[in-house]
Length: 219
Image (cartoon, rainbow, N blue to C red; front, top):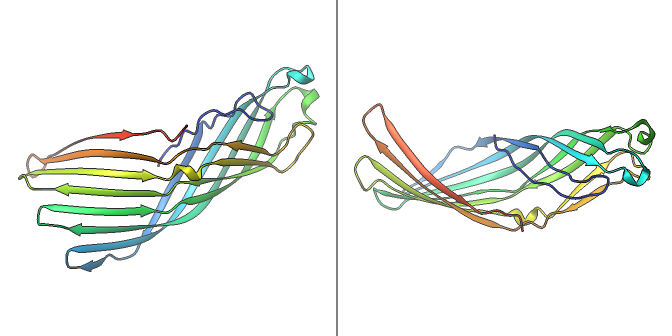
C-alpha cells in the first residue's frame, strides 16, 4: 500500500479541498523471467485498485448562510504494465533497470453535503466521478557484494509527475452553485535516490540500513 498526499487547493464551492486519503493498491502479474547469459528480463501486468476520500469546507457566506462541509468518497481501478532488466556485470556487481507505466484510475463515488436546510436544493447529495493519473516511474539500481558478508546498493528514480496537471471533479447533478470543478496542479518531474546496505551477521541474522532523498513535485 502507498499513500499519496496531494495537498490543499482552492476551488469553487469550497474554502479548500484537501485530499486526506488516496490509497492505491497494486497487484502485479509477472511473466516467467527470460534468462540470457548475464541478463534477466521480466515483464508484468499491473492492476491498481484505489480508494479516495476528499473533504472540503463549503463557503456559503455569499448566501448569508453558515459554512458547510462536503465529503466525497469513491473507489476505482486502472491498468498498466512494468518491465525489468537485470545485468550481471561481474561476479560482484549487478545493474538493474525497471519501468512502471502510468496508471489512469477512474473513480466513482458519492458526494455528501452537510449544509443548512436552506442550501440543500443548491447542494444535493449525489454521484461524483474523477480520474487521477499515477505517474510513470523509471528506476536504476547498482549493487555490489565485493566485500565479504556486505551488500551495497545505490538506486536512482525518475517520477513523471508532470502528467499530474489537471484534476476534473464531475458532479453528476449540477445546480447553480454545484458545478464541475477543474483543479490545476502543474506538478513537475522529480528525481530521488536511495542508498542501502546489508550485512550478513550470521546464518540467522541480517542487518539492513539505508537512506532516501526525495524531491517534491509541487511547484
